[in-house]
Amino acid sequence: MNQINPKHLNIAKISLCLAGVYNILFGAWVIFFPFALFDFAQLERPLYPEIWQCVGMIVGVYGLGYLIAAKDPIRHWPIVLVGLLGKVFGPIGFAHSLYTGVFPLKFGVVIITNDLIWWPSFGLALYLAYRSREAD
Image 1 (tube, one colour):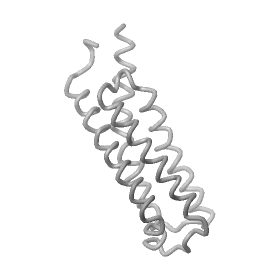
Image 2 (image 1 turned 60 degrees about the vertical axis):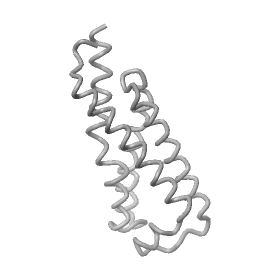
Image 3 (image 1 turned 90 degrees about the vertical axis):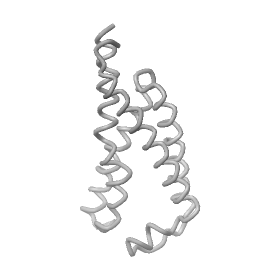
């Protein structure tokens, strides 16, 4: 652990905490207002909004995981890894949907706020976990 810069660890902790709060709020927004994003993107409302609400529940639960990981990102690196994988695969899926014409570019605002902005801080947390294991 002596190779870990405390400032970098604090950045990782704060970022995971912010990601946790964001995910919980976004998940709640999707659950309580399932049509809002579709209306914003001028898409047809889904026939079964409950499926989209389940996505909101999953996002919210991930947020709880990020808050747990924020306490000790080194110890809870698997939560961070799973979160980062979701934040990488989400944009890939969106790119496919954009390419095939399923979603318009406007729907991609969610990719920026849910996924892309968190890549550096999740990557940092995983790098710190790797460095701490290297020091052992």
